[in-house]
Image 1 (cartoon, rainbow, N blue to C red):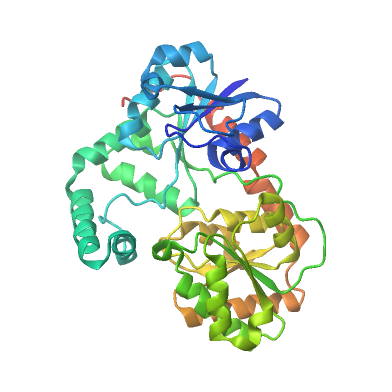
Image 2: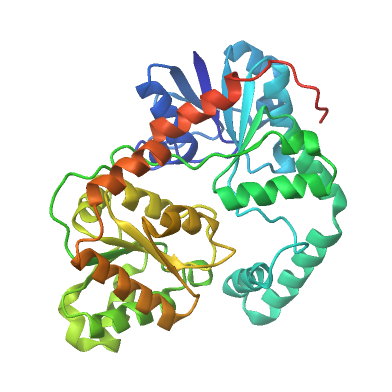
Length: 401
């Protein structure tokens, strides 16, 4: 079978970056299962592009003749259902391929029906980018546009209608998208909405070693609006002060600054917190295999990828319970794979201490956790699910975009 993974933006097609997640990882997983698969992206080319990346002028992606020439049986399109890329979705279908559209979202596209956390997150993001005055203006304008722009919503639904299946990356978000399509009387589109998680790299595999009371937190810590480093710092300092053997590994951009702030808040725990500005996937796998818990402090995430990576390495997950973090509800699995807390520093610290205690008491089984989640979110499992969605259905559809 001939597959294409298409991202209509020009990302560097490097092995460690692009091919370790999202559409690039889908391509690698399909190849590992014996399928013919490659990536199509628009120009320009980037240093490090792999041989199975086909670069074309952006306009060609909207040409059905281009897609017919590729002779693809199926295309995985990472388009976010953005109306700007509807011509691409249309061309793929008219070119004769089955189409899977990935919708990387927490499931809301406007304030209508969304909680106050959605509005707060938009203001926080704009404040972080533009300051309070300009940020408030931009956030207000954005929310008004989302509320009133019915044409924009109709355009998004037309994009989704071209797909044979639409994958949303958490169960809660998938239900929200389903409800959204029904709100605009598109039950035909709603029928094609499914929960399909992002793929997680197969290198993330538990190696059976003894676990240590180490908490790993990974993120772009220079993005204060989304990742909330101030919450990470306060929670880590509180836990180090109350748990005499707990350790923290902070990884990602600006991690060392976070480590300095944690040590300043609780100097006695300075030797039990470490930082790494960057970890390769093999290095992260080694760190997660030794650790017990992955900590998320984000304000919003469609799919907290490092939580999935941690589960495949036998860790549990701790994070705040929030409508803007729907994947954490999935990852915690009713308490079997972690714990969620109220969205406060004190509650998050208490929950982290409780989870460390569960590990100390032998109530967590890392090999079992890793095995369960490998069947759910490992890249091979995800692309197999996409294949079933695309090919276990009639070829003709009655929907009209």
